[in-house]
Image (cartoon, helix red, strand yellow):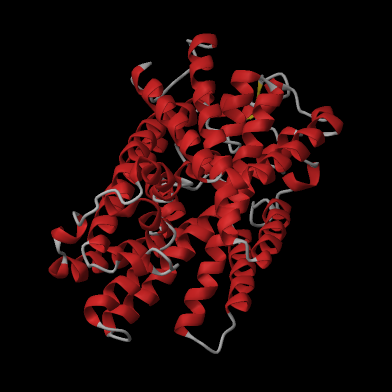
Length: 459
């Protein structure tokens, strides 16, 4: 069954070229949700030690965790009510109209296009550490080409690979926890001064606490490729969130308890370095973590490529972006140009070497998207009270808590990273100018764009 432009069912209509394949189950969404984020346990977060100390980063993690738990509960309602490849752009369009949808989609793309360069550079660094004869930038470029090609082979292939590397990376963290636990010293966690930089240090550590969860929401963009999105999305998302919560707490405190905080706060490979402080440089545990750490980075890089390609595809299908970006390969049912073009942007961004800046820009895109998505939830609850919601969050208390925590994250990000604001403002200015010059002239009718949900409701 397919739908015509008015939303009426038409039996035995030919399948449209732009359809994605529905092949994913809850385990695949769990692996995407965890895999998108798991690199945040292997690098990036430890810079928060330098900003706020151990307890400062731990305190920053509390509101960040509250935010992500409440946000994923709220986001699951949106994702099951509107199981659309556009994810946040689709939710905001339904709630706030064309421009709202475009702005939220662009925010998501900013997050998902500026995060991969930092991860790819870390991949290159890990490869170089294991095989010194390979230049790290060569490894970075090769990683981009390989994972774009792997995504081209189809979602089932991509999801199976993501599941495998995520499980390996998660097992690697378990190995790290067991290696670190016998040497854990709680006195090191509570060493004085508890807050070396005071409250401002806690606020400055928030962006690094976010790194433990950043990009989990990308799993929603696989909604049209889920076998049963309205039942399976909550299972995949909530199990993924629970996994990440345990990972963040164990990784932070066990690393701090090994007593090499100052050193790990200045490198992209904190876990091997932390083990080196108790097992020695070049020891088997250190080499093991260096090798397994590569799988954590690969899981996130690969998962984020899935995310940016689906967001780009969905926005092009809507008409926000050029139509050729919505082209689907007939054999593999993958959005070819939506994989390639953002990948080229990621690659050139990685070649600049401005890792800190691109991470900060990605964080700004994410917090704007979080706030806009929550606003969309409030609007849809008021505007469409009868919308089919297979998963309903406890309303309004959970979304209100999430919004308060989201605003806290925005304030802390501005306080800690105001130097990146001109770059963020410039990107949004270019994106908004494009919308009013060209992007708002080719947007598909609302009923046609959301016909995919009517298809799901018929089944």
